[in-house]
Image (tube, rainbow, N blue to C red; front, side, top):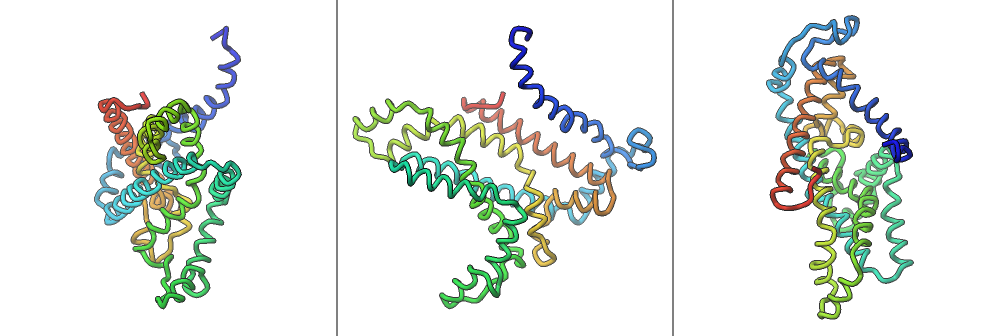
Amino acid sequence: MARNYELYLFLLPTLAYFIVFHYIPIYGVQIAFKNFIAVKGILGSPWTGFDHFERFFASNQFWTVLRNTVGLSVYELLVSFPAPILLALMLNQVGNGKFRKLVQTVTYAPHFISTVVIVGMLYLFLSPRSGLVNHVIEAFGGTPIFFMAEAEWFKTIFVFSGIWQNVGWATIIYLAALSSISPDLHEAAVMDGANKLQRIRHVDLPGIMPTIVILLILNIGHLMTVGFEKVYLMQNVLNIDSAEIIQTYVYKAGLLNGQFSYSAAIGLFNSVINFILLVSVNQAAKQMKQSSLW
């Protein structure tokens, strides 16, 4: 450590961030097992055991928010996770450098648009009166649809707008992995008569498989953590049956209604599920002789 102290100095800001914002706040998790009273503080508040957890499991919102959270997360994982892989594989086969850079720039750009702006754009494009999408539907003889007010459309709009916004940015890591594959492997495949699809299948995909597995494990470890801001902004009274997830429910119960212990219990339940999923998938990857986090 003394010999390489410069490297530890580089790590210091990151370590300080995690200690201050991730480890020290764990002290406050105990309010999930207490009836937290602000004037008494965390230590002075009385213990209640698992009462808040039992209240959540028995509430009429439990199955609704759990179903919506899991459904939205799984839908997003199944559709959004493969998208950057496919885009990276296609870009890697493009020979025209200028065209490739243009596509990369166009697909990266939406990532830097604010979530608030993205949701505002969705309301404009999907408007039943002036929206571009409904104009196209009407042009083909269809009936305008109020997409943002229909519960059955919520998950699809959320997932596919997320792909448009983030697919280019998520492609970066796969392009970096593809660039590390030895050109000799492609040259050997070409000499053996392999076409582009066969080279993708037998050279590119095996080359980036460790990266795919690691990112899949990390994504499943966040399966129950759907983006709060975008979901909350897309919610309204007409689509709430499909749009209420654990994160928005915690926000409403904890910050809007002041039920701090109850919301902390729900958040802890959510985190425990994520932890169990992460450990389980990582162990499964190790047993299948794939890359793993530890």
